[in-house]
Length: 243
Ligand SMILES: Nc1ncnc2c1ncn2[C@@H]1O[C@H](COP(=O)(O)OP(=O)(O)OP(=O)(O)O)[C@@H](O)[C@H]1O
Ligand SMILES: [Mg+2]
Image (cartoon, rainbow, N blue to C red):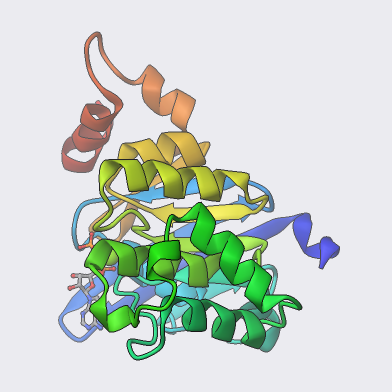
C-alpha cells in the first residue's frame, strides 16, 4: 500500500452534483497530497457531506471526477484504503460495543480483532460499555463507537464527517488525541475549529457548493484582525468572503 502514500490521495476535478431542486456542488476542484491534513469548513447546506459521500462512492457526481488514492471511489481498491465516518453514523444497534468493533475488525482483515477492540475501547473510554448493546448507549457514546469503527483498520486515508458531534468537551479532546496519533491523510468536515487547528494544517471553505477560500491554518490565522478569533475569521469568510 506504500505506493499510495505519494502523489494525490484525494482529488476532485470539476465536480458538479445536482439534486432535483439544488446544486449541492458547483464545479469544485481540489487536490490533497498524501500525508496532508485538511479541514472542510462551511455553513449548513454548503456541500460538505455531499463532498465526502462522493469521495467514498456513496454518491456519483453529476459531472466531473473524484479519485481517492488514485482510484475510482466505487472500486474495491478505494474501499480498502479509506476509513469513513458518516455524519449520521449508527453502529449495529443489537450488537454490543465489543461485538461491533470485533465484527468490523474481522471484516477488515485485522488479525487480532479482540486485542484491537480492547485498545480502541480503552483509548475512547468505552470499556464500561463493552457488553452493552449499542441501542442502549447515549448519542455521545454511540458516536465514539462509530469513530472506532471508522479507524479500526488504521486506514491511510481518513474521511470524517463532523467527528465530534454529540461529544462532551473532555471526550472531544480524547478523540482528537486518538486521531492525532494515526499517520494518515485526513479530510475532516467540522464546525469545531479546535479539531481543524489541532488535527489539520489546511482548510477548504465551501459556501453554497463553491470553494470560497483555501489555504493553510497559518494563513487563516494571519487574516485575523487584532482580537479576532480564528472562528470569527472563518465566519467572516463564510458570510462575506475574504475582505
Ligand atoms: N439526498 C439529497 N437529496 C436532495 N438534496 C440533498 C441531498 N443531500 C443533500 N442535499 C442538499 O444538498 C445541499 C448540500 O447538502 P450537504 O448535506 O452536503 O451540506 P453540509 O455542508 O454537509 O451541511 P451540514 O453542515 O448541515 O451538515 C443542501 O442544500 C442539501 O439540502
Ligand atoms: Mg453535513
